Image (cartoon, rainbow, N blue to C red; front, side, top):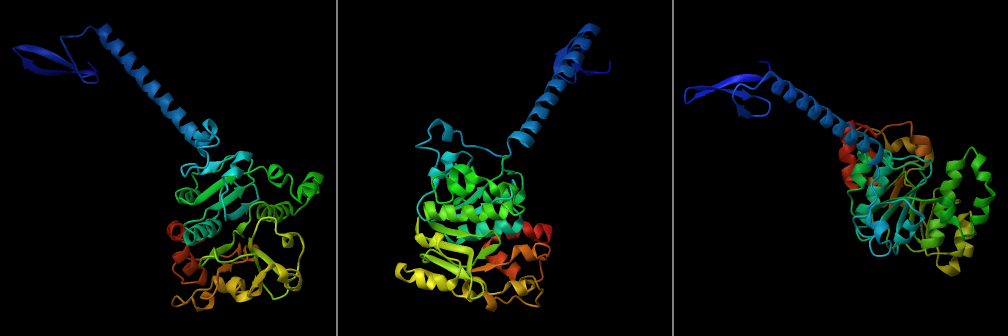
Length: 344
């Protein structure tokens, strides 16, 4: 009797217990036992199929959730706080006044630790503004990634997949985009990044930030402002402009900003306010220090860690580097995740 055992005597009669189904009966015929066995196998098979379907759905379809109210009522519901992932061209209508923008143009479905820190630090210092990350990824965003998972829990962060052609339509860059020469360029991602940052500033205004920065204080008081990393050239790691500002299409040098921008009230942040460490000394951000020391970046709005140069380097947790201290205090959630990995 492989599936049954003898139970207690009840009024002097032996009762057999079906141990799998908990059914008390007198000696069940062999055919009943075999039937129960078949039913059990069917139940186990069904449970296995359900588990497999759930796993496949989680891995391949649930990576990017779309709040279905977006589709049911595209006017009243799509921009409500629960809707953090929108992937249609209409998502651009959710961008409110004085937004903060980041762009991810490598077609990646996720962000690195440093990119996630940039986004969190902007959201952290601007609780009443929204930080929008615009992805060009043709695939669903990977919300199983630990850094992406942390960002979607921040109330004023929005992750938006956008169609670049729709974004630039009707702007001064639409002709450039439609010619399509950028498609064969070895610097396609860089060209697209430049185009998207200028386009969102032209359309919406607000603040644009590169994804290799850390925001150290509020930027909300900046108005029609750009930066310089050497006192001569205009830097584009930080832009703060009104929509359709003519200077966005006009200048390359600081001198041009001072001449052309003076009547418009355009300013240029001092090098120390946005680039306290020059690109020639980028290693200083990652050097180990005996004790934490933020004096070098104390007066800065942002730090820019020159990811093109520093991507091969590492911020090692516990070494008190400038970048670690910036992460610790200005993107605490991302830093907590970085601490589990040990580096960024």
